[in-house]
Length: 243
Image (cartoon, rainbow, N blue to C red; front, side, top):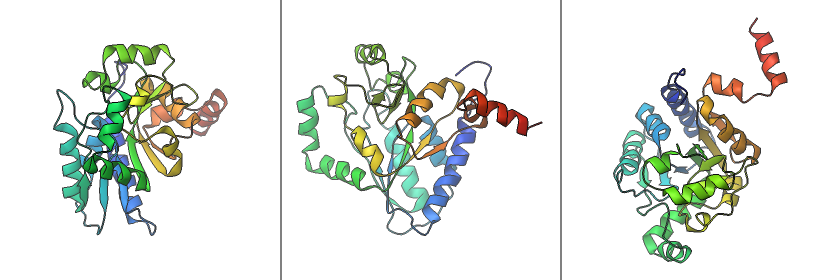
């Protein structure tokens, strides 16, 4: 994050929690919600009020185990289940397998297959949005190696969602890592409502890519980032409204 900016995560988390409550209270409320992990998702969950919603299930959208942060995603799933009186289904495996064959073998295991199938049944996904750069959280958490990240950056990565990397037009990069990713495939993004959470002007490139590829239907961000996402004409119109 640029040093001259305050951390937008607390504000985004509070807004995202309110938005999720509205989704859950709507007449056509979803029965299954897919959840990614990361700092903004964890902050959103901490902001949720205690509610009791019958038959609600939360399912992890991607493999969660890491070397240094193994308990972190599981804690988030447990917390959201407690706050909303819901069931939670984590995906207890690594985000990236060693080979495509290993990824296929893992998803044939009954427990993992059940969770992966439930993720595709979810009507709504709530996801964080990462940068296609060395500062990506997955690299910082040890979930993606330096060599894999260097390959992806070299291919022109602009955005990361659910461990999958996309170019500036929102198209998934055909990398070796993509075939080893234990998360829903890129076409699955288009089959449900995807709520993205991200902010800070260092995320503008990533957000442009996600929006260009129609990977998101809802975006929860901060006002500074929202303005930065506008083109020059739109920014001028916005500035005129504030006068």
